[in-house]
Length: 393
Length: 230
Image (tube, rainbow over all chains, first blue to last red):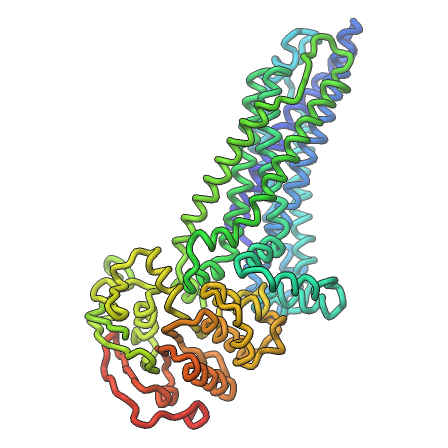
């Protein structure tokens, strides 16, 4: 078998993100379906306003949180498949060379959908554990008639079955596209550079001459930093996403405390930190694993651990702070919309202002967290030796 | 001068622990061209790695002049390699996403060498500075790794089967470049090979067998890369 369950199990990132997305969406969507059942019991204007406000909340949360996390999972899935093909290109190339078609190989990539199923099922189950408390919280002031918790098979189908099937199909299609290239490109070393060469031949690499001249003037470490950033753009996205989650969710959790409840805030904080940790760790691990040979050679030549880490990880630092800034803007925008638009007609909604101290605390915590992760990986670099690279051949 | 005294090195652990180097003692004169010759599994590459400070021996001492590098910490060893040592491997290990110029700069930056372009010219790649490793032949890639190693102006150059992946003509060309550059820059060469013919180019030949030195001799007449057999 080309791809096994073991390979799919490595997609922890997708499972975690899907788990968080499904957890949030299940709670809100299930509540939405249950709330629909009490629509005909609404009597007062206050009840109708509250009902519509909660309906709008469900839409916003499912679209914004669910949509963002779903999109990130798709990007992560594509990244993993491309990474898998890049790291197993020789085996895949041999299979193609002896006559297996791209489609025949790609069909095995359906197992990547298993990671989605695991995450989605865990998120769905987790949501049902939290829902009794969530329902009580949503209607704590008893503005609405009692909303009873029911199981809706359509929610299960929509949030567990459908994503699993869709992700499996996506994995197969994407793998098929990625495998549709000449066998020699898969078999030869420096796959990506060869690809660039063929693109260049087609006249698709624009402005490369100018770029090459600029790169040469910089130091080796600086050049490597840029080349590392450019070679895996998806990792830049993940690092932005990780810092975005950290920033948005930590700040929102403190604001939620005033706007909703402490438990809601704690849940948001937990989801944010989980997403940030998992994504950041996976992204940095991929950077290190993808550059073991470079690190080993740098160490052989006498570059210090700090210089290796600076060359490979240093470029991501500014990117992570951009992610943090985007997260801050996002959470402010989202809460502004919730307070000013969704709950506009509801009485008693607290005033919401941008919380500078919370932002500063979040920024300092993020800086400490980020630097601790970087320190851990700088220490990990020490363990990479030329011996294992030589043994790899 | 490099002096190794009673070097022992083991691989594996527990029941699978076996000796790779057994009480090796040798010395390499500064400016010398020494070849370590031996069959596959004789321990020659391990000896090269230990001599150059890439690996630590379990026993014995390695001294560069009066400096015992086996007593160095990891940081000191890195600093030592930075200041003194250049490496050329059979598999080149060039950085695929960097062009020839940037790969050579990896070595040059460590020595603050701004004129590394001369070395690229000297190995005959002046016209290919902007090419990437995948756009070069095996011989050209090995010449890039020669330029990269020499751009850091090492006092000692360690080579592990540098022609192992090359055809005869390219192999001779690379060896010729290395010897010519040694005459120009005056560094010490320690080369590992299993090719008896290449040993005829060296001044000192150390033969290894099963982790021990079986013979050390000096060549009275040294041949050039184009005079040896292949």
